[in-house]
Structures are given as structure tokens and as C-alpha cells.
Image (cartoon, rainbow, N blue to C red; front, top):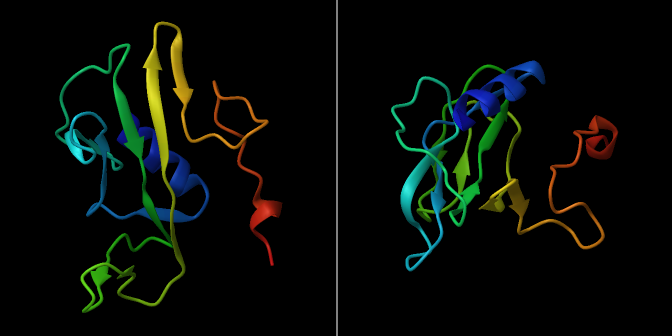
Length: 123
């Protein structure tokens, strides 16, 4: 369960997942089905199969409040408390042997996600 895994990793690092945003399938429609929830206890159904392309793009808030609000520009999402937040996206292709990260940086392993390194994110 993708959503449960993202939730557990977020909580382990002192963050919460915003339930408003989901990943999505990529095909004839860029933002097409299926919806890929990033939070636990979701009602997603289905099995990812070789050939499927989808995004994972959670918004994570620092702390336990996973809420959000949208500015009047109808695009910018912020936390209701002013806490720090981040959003990122990767696109994956399901293969016979697992997955390939289609948005991996050049020179990195396209068949695994990089380990989280908190030092990279310190000021």
C-alpha cells in the first residue's frame, strides 16, 4: 500500500501527509486514472501491473497537522498553521521486475529511490 508506506515514512521523520493531493496515472490523459493516495487508510483499489505509469507526489507538512489551504490564485497550497511544507514528484514505470524511476536524476540508479539524507536539507 503506497499510501501507508508514505505515511509511515513521513511520521518517522516528524511530518504529516496532506490528504488533499494524490498521485495519478499517466497515459492518454496526463492526470488520468488511477488516483494514487499518499495517505493511510485510503480506499484505493487495484494492482499495479507491468506497463503502468504513475506519479507519486505527496505534500508533506512539518509536524502533525496534515491540513492545507489554497491561496486565491487557486494553485498555491500552504499549511493552515504556517508550518513548513514541501511537495515533490516522481514518475514511475512498473516493470516485470519491479519499477523504474522515470524522473531519476542523470547518473543515478533508475531502479531504486535514493536514501533520505537529512543533511541535504539543512540550511
